[in-house]
Length: 173
Image (cartoon, rainbow, N blue to C red; front, side, top):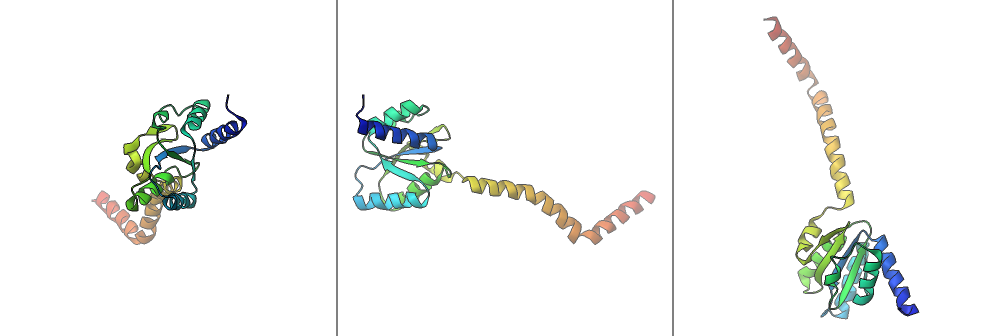
């Protein structure tokens, strides 16, 4: 039975897991305090909650919430966890940018919308489009045919009339 203090942390972790649509696991061992603070600031800019929890408490919370069985084996060494609700690829983009100048933290695993991504999938996650980018793409695709038709009718109105006359004249011959 966990102590009251551990139970409070366990409840906090469980709440973070329930709210998050993606959870990233990173190994931060070997990072300086300055680098860890710099990384935490980068995550904050991306609207990502980044925190260190004990692996045992994280494992208990993951088992309690469910759906994290594939991530549990990654809970070794010193881990920090990134929780995100909206922009699911934001932690991967932050990590990728941060790793250009630093050797740590090491990306270990992630659960994104219920799908597991192993340590070799950071590039894949970073390449994912955000929700807003996808919506923009869809709106662009929907608007393109309408604007093409309207553009053709407006810009080529006189040619359209000429084309109809030509077709009509061919039909008479």
